[in-house]
Image 1 (cartoon, rainbow, N blue to C red):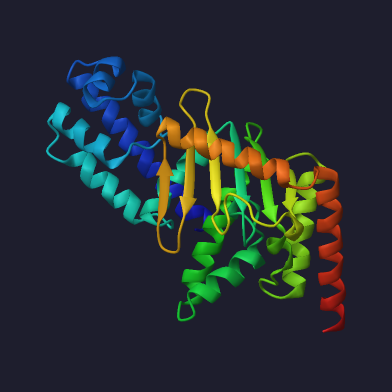
Image 2: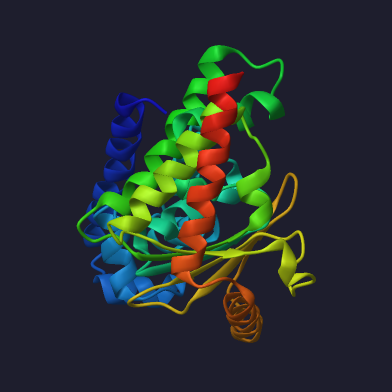
Length: 280
């Protein structure tokens, strides 16, 4: 996603918000009144109007019903989501990442998206899309790199990652790419932008074998959990399910190496890849 494309999409969402405010006021409704009729808070309506938060499709449809806009907001929503560089089932996750006050991730096989370098992303995208054009690959690379910018914002979320040791050993993109990727993680950890732990091979079985997990907490909303399979994802907000997910993460954290020992292991893996790259 080029910067210009991102800007035009944001401008389109701002248009969505401006139209929502105009039509709400024409209907003589306050944000609280409209929110009550479409089953969200008045604060959410305000965030929709400011393009801070994007509504789900069912909310856009209910807004059309209440404001009698003949499907205008549903059609605009579908157009904007269609133009997104992210899969439809991941679009909401991206929006929630921007709003989260804390993000906790467990990565079983590859580096989490928010931490990936361009070369690492490119290697993943090419392997999964062997017939794609360079333009398509670069759009996906830029979109994922753009996601990671939230860790550099002044209002960045607290970010805690648990990486299985497998993440450090699989040579995605080759030794040079891996060395650069691991150095990037070390840099973020050393300046305390993120906190990282490694779950070593020696830990054996664990409660989330083979499954990635992302937990997000918010200032004004309940926490959510997100898990992913090959071509789909599940955003979970049922309180009992999220509570159980938090317990699983606590178990992973307890089984992982300390942050200090984890950085030492990551440094060692990075050095191994650097040496391999220099001799290849």
